[in-house]
Structure formats: C-alpha cells, structure tokens
Image 1 (tube, rainbow, N blue to C red):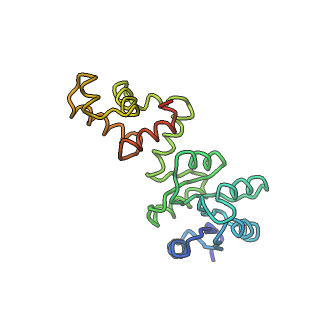
Image 2: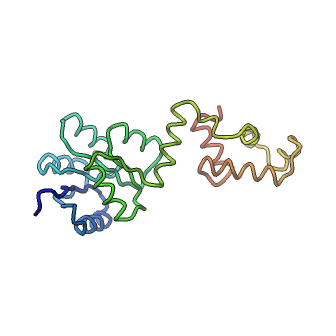
Image 3: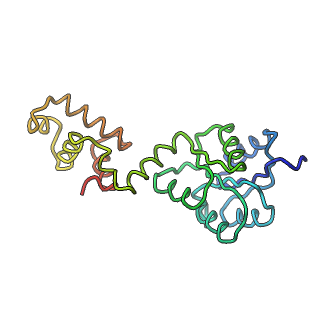
Length: 213
C-alpha cells in the first residue's frame, strides 16, 4: 500500500456503528485502516502497537473513556492525532476534549464523508468541529468566560426568573403589563437559546449554567 496514506485506528464499543465506519474509511483512497478496538483499554494497546496517524475515539466507552485515552497518549508522548465521534456532545465534554488536545469532534449523526474529511484534516494538523458541536463549544466558552448571563436579553431574563418562581404566562403578562402572546414568544426564545423545550427544563438548564441562582 502507498506509504503516504493516512493510517487510521477506530475505537467504538457499538459493533454496528464501528463496522459502518470501518467500511467508510476503507473506501477512502487517502486513508488506510490499520486497526479497531471496542473499548478504551484495547484502543491504547492497539495505538501503542500499530502507531496510527489518526485515531477515532468515542467519549464513552467501557472501562476507559475517550478523553482518558487521549490524556494517556499525551502523557506517554505518543504521536497520534485524535478525532472524537460521539453521540455525547455536551458543552463541557466537548470543551474538555479539545482542551486535552483533540483535533476534531463530530456527532454520530455526521456523514461518513464528513468524518473522513475530519480525519484527513487532523492528519494535516487542522481541527474540525461538526455543525452540531459548534454551538456546544460556543456555549461553554461563554459560560467559562462569565458572559453566559448575557445570553438572554433583560426582558427574557426577567420572564425566566418569574417562571422559576412558579408564575404562569398569563400571570407574568399581568405583572409586566404585557400581552400573553408576547410573554409566550419571549419564553420560546429562552427555550431556543437554552436548547430546551419546556418551562421546567428551561429553569433547570438556567440553574445549571448559573443564569439563575
């Protein structure tokens, strides 16, 4: 095989998904699949033995998670680029993975071509974030920089706080001298900004982020 192909190892504990990704990688001319693993410990052993250029990791795997594998690779000085492909892309998880040196993070909803393109980019020293992941990264940066409170407008923040106090939309409308439809529109925008779909989830998410005390 041509020596200039990018050597790839895939680690994922879901056999069907891993098999699909293996087949996708094999179809890309610039990529060479050198191994696969079903958990973090096996991935470490394979990386040490096979020395791939790029490794695909899932965040949550039995025993040793993907971020722990990445940190171990860094401690051992192993020269392998890591791209995460995972169903889990909470903002703090993605931020932590990138902070630990990951060269990419995509959701499992990404297409095979998108993942393969990310592997090529990683081998070239570039970082790729999936569309679904970009919002999570921006959210975490805002939260960590102390700017999360500015995610909501003053009116949205006021309505959210009244909602957290148990007031209904009609009650809030009367207290703020607004139309009920206006209040519901503000609440819908709050849901969209927080990535939730109902009042209880909005309050819980706002508390988790520190928007509500």
